[in-house]
Length: 261
Ligand SMILES: Nc1ncnc2c1ncn2[C@@H]1O[C@H](COP(=O)(O)OP(=O)(O)OP(=O)(O)O)[C@@H](O)[C@H]1O
Image 1 (tube, rainbow, N blue to C red):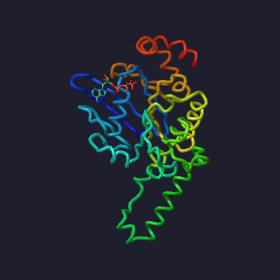
Image 2: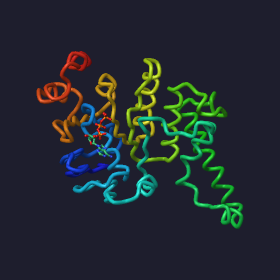
Image 3: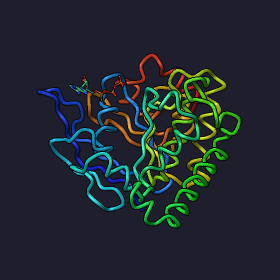
Image 4: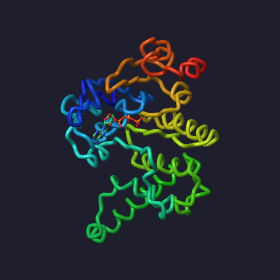
């Protein structure tokens, strides 16, 4: 079953077609990558999926439900979580507290009702703490748990951001350049965790990433965009063989990509 069905989405900014007739589906537990040159429309698609941009045309269904037109927080509450190109965490809060913020959608009790329903609120708090502990274990963040995020190495901060998204218990995770700016070791760590998210947690992912080696190694399917239009969607092997893709996008990187096949 598909968790995400995107159909004929078009989005223009004062005449510039950022997204132009984009359709794709993401299956349960699938790792779907979107690649394309700078300005091809990748971030715009993420912003459409998460409700930040409202396209002029098309449909986006999440688990069969139309989500176009919904506010970002509602889409997130339904189970679509996101990480950002530039880390968006609270630098002076600890790892644990940043992850607790990811539980926000699961907290039903405000201060007043918490007072009235002390027992239930307490149980809920414990359940949220446990969920955060599970994420800390899963992403091997134990040694940094009580440190302010701003003091941590860059690669670990990106991992905490992934953790904040996982703490939401999403059904679909949107990963915006998960290894941008990372060194080789940090990239390998992140690649391993992304695969674990798919294989152990069964969460579907849409990943935008410029690191072609990583995309071709990790993704189940890849969509190649050029000037807002999809020019090919297929397995990494199919995409790398496609002459249009090579011509329109891979160009000088062809050797690297071909070498990874
Ligand atoms: N808020 C906006 N206002 C006006 N134009 C925009 C806006 N957001 C994106 N665009 C334009 O839409 C097109 C697609 O941009 P987008 O950022 O989605 O591309 P991208 O593939 O994510 O690029 P990159 O790889 O550099 O992140 C570009 O021409 C861009 O200038």
